[in-house]
Figure 1 (tube, rainbow, N blue to C red):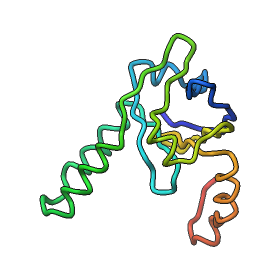
Figure 2 (figure 1 turned 30 degrees about the vertical axis):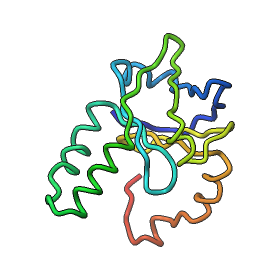
Figure 3 (figure 1 turned 30 degrees about the horizontal axis):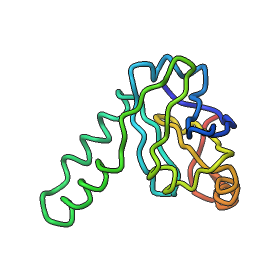
Figure 4 (figure 1 turned 180 degrees about the vertical axis):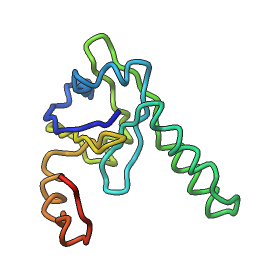
Length: 139
C-alpha cells in the first residue's frame, strides 16, 4: 500500500497523534515510528518496516556499523493506535522532530513522514523539480 496525501493534525495534551482515518486499517495491527534523516519521523506499517530492518541488519559488523545499527533500532518504537486512531509519540521522538502542536503527516510512498508544520515549509522550499533532478516522470 502506498501512503499518499497530506494531513494536518495537532498533538493533544497527552502528546497523542491521530493516524489518518483512511490508513488506519493498514496500521491496525501496529506500526513502527522511527527517526528520519531530515529531523522528522517515519511511520512504517509492519510489512513495510521488514525490508528496512533487513537492510540495516545486513550491514557489516564493524564497530561503526554496530553503533549505527544500535542507534537506529534504539530510536524506533513499535506503536499501536487506541480505539480513536491515536498513538502516543515518545518524548525523545517528539524532541528529535521538534514536534510541539501543529503537525503534518505526509504520505511518502511506503511510509508516512511526520513533520512539525513550520519545519516542513522550510524544507519544501528546498525541493527540486523532476527536471532539475534530471528524472522523467510519466503522468
